[in-house]
Length: 355
Image (cartoon, rainbow, N blue to C red; front, side, top):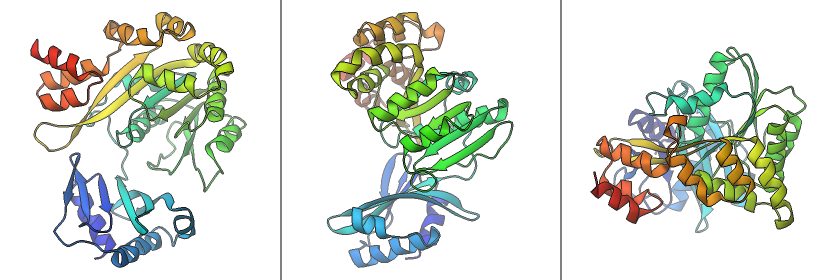
C-alpha cells in the first residue's frame, strides 16, 4: 500500500479522516461515518511500514517520541494535495494513526453553515472568547474562519499558539504569527507568556489545558487583548463550570469575579450527520455576555444561564437544543440525531412532538 495514493484517494473522496489501525482495513471518515476501504486487514508489520512512510513524508520526522512515549501529534503537507494532521499512537503494543485532512484553502464559513454572528466575533477587540465542543466537532475550523476574518478586515497583530498548526494564514491586512507547540515554543504556557511581550492584538490559544494557562489567558484578556481559545465542553454553562472548577476552592470566588468581567462569548458546537448521509452540519449554542449573565457568574448561579440564552434571541443567542430543533425543522437532520445530541433527550422528544 502506497501512503500517498491512500491520501490522494481520501482527498478525492472528501474524507475528513483516515484511520490506520492494525487488525482492520484502512478506513475513511466521510460525512461523519467511518467506512472500510475493502476487506483486507492491515497487520502490525505492514502498519509499521506505513507509519514509517508517513514520518518520511513529514520531513523525515524523528519517531523517538511515539516509540518512547506512545503518542505523537504533528502536521505536514503534501505539495499539490493537502495538509494533514497526524495523531500517531501505540495501541495493543502496535503503532496506529488517525490522520485529519486539512485543505490548503481556508474554509468559507458560509459553506460550513457557520452563522455570521459567530464570525463577527472578529470585531471584538478585547476579552476572552471560547469555542467549545468534543474532539472532531470543528472547533479548529471555526477558529480559522474567525482569524481569517480578522486578517481580511483588521490591521492587527495576531499570534496563534497551536498543537499542531492546521490552517496556514497568509499576512493580509493583519500580521499573523503562527507558532507550533513543541516546535516553536515549549508549551502553551511558555508561548502565551512570550506572546504578551510581542505586541499582540489577538492571541489564539489552541487549548487551555490547566488552570495556570487559563489564569494567564484571563489576565491577557483583562489587559486589553482579544484571547480566543477552546475547551472540550458542550454548552456555555458547562464551560463556565469547567473553568471555575479547574481552580483550587480557595481561588474560585476570585475567578468567578474575574471571569464575569473578561468573558465575552462562548460558542459551543457539535457536528450532526445530515439526513441524506452526505456530510455533517454544525449545531451551535451561542452565548454573548450581558449584564444578567455576568451577575449569574459572579453570584454562582450558573444553572440559570441556559434560561437567559433561550430568551435572548434578539441578542444573537441560541441554545444547543433550539439549534438542533431548527436543523430538524429544516429537514437537515433526523429526529433520532436531534434527540441523541440534545442535552435533555426527554425534553427534546416533547419539543419535536409539539411541532
